[in-house]
Image (cartoon, rainbow, N blue to C red; front, side):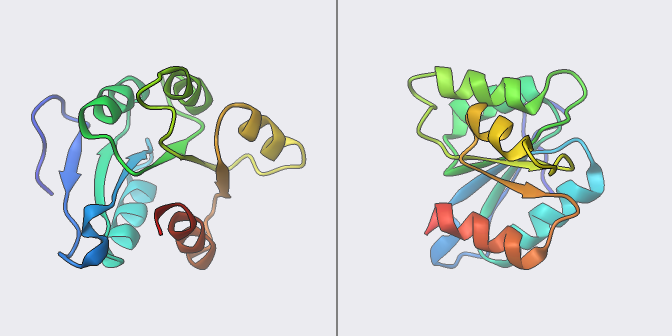
Length: 141
């Protein structure tokens, strides 16, 4: 995958040129295997992806590229994904971008906390491929 200027954790890849290629998803995920899985699933369905492992970079990338959707890991190393989501929702130019939390925390009460944090939806890890695609498509179609 080509690496974008601006930082070692940032990557931008295109879709397959299909009708969905104009839709871009920013993936904020610190686990390399999850990042690859999300990227491969999205690209296979014609979506472009932006990728970062860092919450601060996610803000920079969202400002620069205005993705159509953000997949946000809640457990990031430096700053929580919920904190990054709050920053996004506090920014007048970025608040309209839907954020889907991707989290291993899928216990009772967690969904409410995630939604109160500004996320429009959430996907539990380990992911169900069908549920993942259904949730993403709900926000991109």
